[in-house]
Image (cartoon, rainbow, N blue to C red; front, side, top):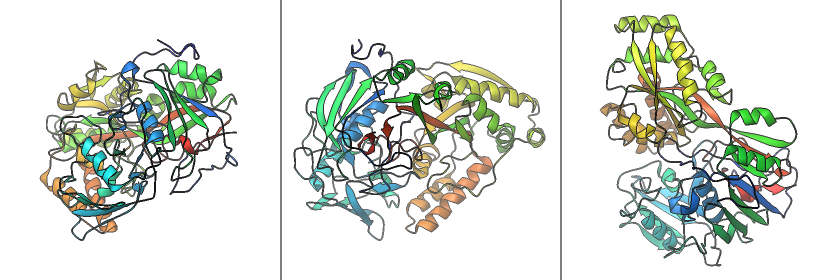
Amino acid sequence: MHDERFPGLRRRGFLAATGAATLGALALTGCGGPGNKGQDDKGGTPKRGGRLRAAFAGGGAGETLDPHLSNLFVDVARAKALFDQLADYGADLSARPRLAAKWEPNKTLDRWRVTLREATFHDGKPVTAQDVLYSYRRISDPKKAFRAKASLEPIDLDASRATGRRSIEFVLRRPTAEFPNVLAAFGAYIVPEHANDFDNKPIGSGPFRFVSFAPGRSAVFRRYDHYWDGAPHLDELEFVVANEESARVNALLGGQVEYAHELNPTTARAHEGKGQIEIVRLRNSAMQAFCMKTDRPPFDDKRVRQAFFLIADRKELVDGALSGAGEIGNDLFGKGYEYYADGLPQRHQDLDKARALLKQAGAEKLKVTLDTSAVAAGFTEAAGIFRDQAAKAGVTLDVKMGSKDSYWSDTLNNGTLSCYRSGAMPIDAHISQRLLTDSATNATKWKHKDFDALYQQAQSTRDKADRAAVYARMQRRLYTEGGFLIWGFADWILGTARNVKGVDAKAPANTMDWARFDKVWLA
């Protein structure tokens, strides 16, 4: 089926934003804090009025506006227009207040008091502590598979309570210095108490209110004039489903939409600077890596891992696999994010030293299978480039193509070397999800009790500078002997009509300024 108003916008497949292929997306101007109206240096004075039509890949007839089930890019963009969270991530992936005006812990970091700002739902009722507790308890329902459930696990919701109409005491299961990151967890939207029906007439506290919804086709929202962060500039916002990148681009070029989400680097190069449409590159949005299993040969020898770090020509990988749409990595996650260890020297290719390390490890004529797949852009290209780089160090890489449908599950526990990527998340979340002994998605099989202990120490350290020092120590070890060869960070690319203003390209995907259509205007 396709919408007759948009010929050529055919529905085929969808992009899930779960597992290793976490959310990537757009960043539309938001705020460094409440009240910032989102002017950029070339947008001029915001103008009120008009309808913006935004084309996204969708999920077919099974789509829902339930914000707690948001997984696809379009799901999250729609949820962010209708609803709000207690916190969201800033450009550096630190938590920033949204519906929460402030938060403060007790001395032992196992109880946090959150104070809500004055905000209202679209029916005029105030957002209260009871709405927050209802929302979090709904997300945490053991019978449901809501996105933010695992993120809310540190909260003892039976013991947590409202201490006033706009104040909540959260009781935690363990001391947690980074509790604000829990409040900013993806999918932790606040809904009215007892709300369950979200597809007919959802009521949220976001910048837009519901008008209509046709699953797999379109959704129309209208400006909410009483939004706590200021009414949107747009009168209306319409989300249009277009699964093919070519369909989104053609609709943008033909004036059928004003915004096209997720373009590939080839499209961007073809249109950038030509004047017909605007290309926006969101830097630092997706980590690109090779994952080495540290619990099995040959990567159970740290000298082999260190040799592979030195085999990689990162610039060649970024230029070839990402068509230059990104920047080089330094074998650490979260470049530019809060707590990132940016003082470590940039690693460069050194084939002589790589050969020497392999010789020391008794692996001079090493042969390794490199698992890859067309599951993510640049994977197959990266595998071919790295195969050629490894050959110069005397290493034979046998590139093995895997299924797009089962790649992530197949390579999580199997194989020895694989292509890998991740979207944006705080560095502490990356560590807890992927690098602790009991982490459910520990793809490199990095299991060290002393490393686990350092993480617990960081989590319970009140002073931010002291906490940063612990994270820096952990990253120095990963840089020296970890299992992630992080060679780059890919841009996320979107296109807009020339009259769309207020787009912010400074924030990576998944941050507070992502999907901020309330701060965009039509010139």
